Length: 387
Ligand SMILES: [Fe+2]
Image (cartoon, rainbow, N blue to C red; front, side):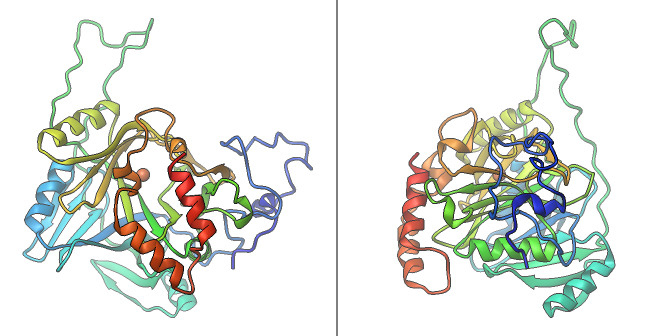
């Protein structure tokens, strides 16, 4: 289990203060954890997964899902009457699996195991079974929020597709583009890869510890409810532990919410112009914009958020942070204004506060036993989304 020693114990070393090191040496945030707070990583995880492999959805209309997918920037990897597989341009398995289903819904994520033996460890540790899956193997787990979580190994990568080179930019006294113009076609994005998924849950602490203990993920940043730091974090940005190899700032982000469900997933593009120009294309095609352009604080990505015809939110991003395993979690209060360092204020369309189902979910969550939603937490969440 993840225990809560002093934050610095998490890395197995003495505290930076005790050893005379700069306390901010491995900290990207203004504030780190306090003694006794959640360390953001497990001392002895079952395995350490290597990445997020794909996301699984169900949709009633696969033609519409395929149309949005290609407009958003995916390439169709395969299509059958019952399934659409959408991919990015980097060598990887298809990152979006869309099956025909009665209603639009997120099913669950699939993570990539670093080694075949890790699937056996997971099966032994969780009571699961390793089965053959898409040319490789997989084990199906269930997280404390109730999401089915697949962990796979050996599923063959699709060959890489050509990528546009980053635009040459002229910087002040160092122009790189003499006698040449900058003209980017307004067309669908070229998605490079799946970056992360964000999930809301009524059982945040339990789910957080499960991902750290079971899959070996580690926390890049914690957000807490302002004035309620004593109750621990209410949101976590979580990355893969690849040792000295830098990993995306977050592969999974989770937040305490009145209802458990998918929030959004994010896909990496080459550069800022790709994000902006492909957004113009989506706007011309009549898709609903949710929030952007802006630059996040936690993860630093330049972002733009869109909703598909089923109101499912998808993010284009570029220029995100990558951290190796030495970086310790930052701590900051959750607030609407703190979601970006520049760009328009986060919209109600993005935060979901304009959704009447949220109030209904909040009342239900307060009545239900066995979750972490109480009146104090709800007050903290309402305050955060209005600040
Ligand atoms: Fe995101």
